[in-house]
Length: 320
Image 1: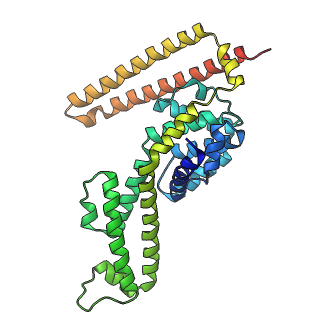
Image 2: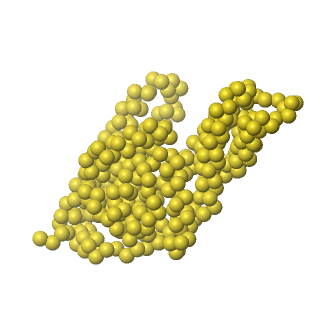
């Protein structure tokens, strides 16, 4: 997989991120991360933090950026590790990364790929865009769409084009005398300055839709490239650390965690059965909340225990 093949696809992903208020990141950072270069480490930590706290509200995104820049690095790292651990990303190579954000960009890139796939990030952005356009146009044609996301994008692009053509005709006063205008169009007709503003928004929406179509057509290139990231050789430093780890101790810890996870799964099954069997669901809300809080506490405890285990094993493996 050549860089020239994947660069346009990564650029597309970066543009999608930018359109939803994420901090600027370039395809060069992804390429640097593939080869574990330190320059890409902080930008990727920042991107993952923003993804975890993603909110379609631009002001919320700005708050998230500010929190990242104002919070200690080790606190940010532990917050991200804890969040991803709860989502199921329990890989030791990631959890054992130092909290100073100086190394580990390749592991972060792999984790980023897992996160955008696991959270269906692109699908979430598509739905936000479609809902936004639907609300702007207030069209039954959009409200009643029952196609898959890509078919919806194609249909919405057609509707978007019609609306823009109609607005340009209103703006240039080229409507025929027998043309009927909606109340919304009449309002725009009375306030021409709003037409340019609305057209600009629709054109931005169309640009987003084009990005989504491009991503859908070429995303397999991105995932093949991510496979090549996984195929990169382990650094000598990481290999030495892994080769000196006490495997028996690690296996014992693994069994403890598996047993704890089984216990948590059992608790979740109990919640589901309790919820299904009880007709007066409001009466068990407190019980369910209590169980969920208990599970969350247990997961946090397991996560901290795992971090401590990783730290101990790492210290044991380092030369005196």
